[in-house]
Length: 170
Image 1 (cartoon, helix red, strand yellow):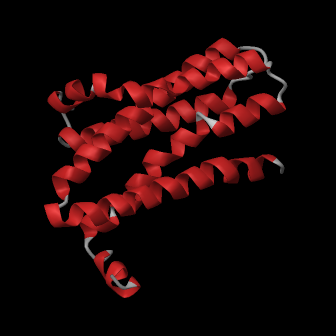
Image 2: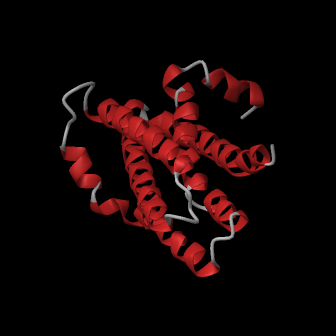
């Protein structure tokens, strides 16, 4: 497939929306993983505590446990997929903002709880996004749609990883 053919597929709104949704899905992961560990290292949090913070990645592994509940419960507004996407996005914005306000040297347990909630919300968003992608894309579009969403996801990981660390130097 030529580059021009791939770019032409972006005119399909169902495909094009996968890029920002993939970005929104990937952004919190780096913030609750590598970027968080770098921040904790810079502010001299001890290595044992930093090691314990890696446990906040568990929701991404265990999300299959609550995925059926999310699939069956329909938020009262905007439908099953969009309602959950908006709810998780709002919760992520709030959670990430609160994360930035917590001093990890004074209240590491509070920060751990907030980061865990952000990771759970992010994993929940991944569940909904994957289901939404399956719902809106026709079977022949799903492969390219998945590639587009992974591209957005990877761009977000670069932005929230390297981008956050670059910004922190200013």
